[in-house]
Length: 164
Image 1 (spheres, rainbow, N blue to C red):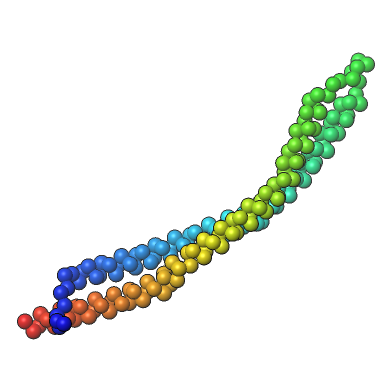
Image 2 (image 1 turned 45 degrees about the horizontal axis):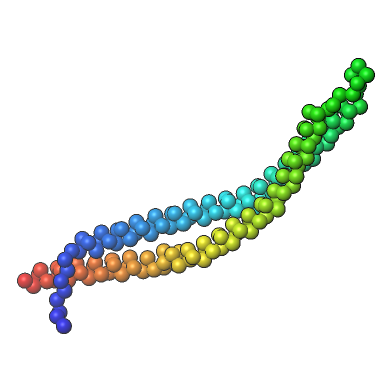
């Protein structure tokens, strides 16, 4: 084995170390941003949407009651001895009942979506765990190794140029 090393570029080691630091910073920043977006999405699904649909259900019950009252009042009226058909009121009541049915279905849909999203988030976190582990441990160790390697190579180059 030879006691000399062929080093093509100390600058390449320094550039690689800088690029690895930049990657570490950017990847950590992106993962943090993703975590924040995930938390917002989960909060929206777990808290905001159920509260919103509870409120909508109350509003739709009120609307059904209002349209039923309007329809019943219309049917009680007589105009010039004739009863009106009250078609508009009946249609409004039926439409309100359909909106209520749709609103009543939303909490179950949201619960199913929330379960699915939680499962997907758990899978994502499991898969991204290796990258996090590397960013927290492996990359800093590698940067340290590169810095020590660069220092050793610089020392070697200085020693070799001083003996020539």
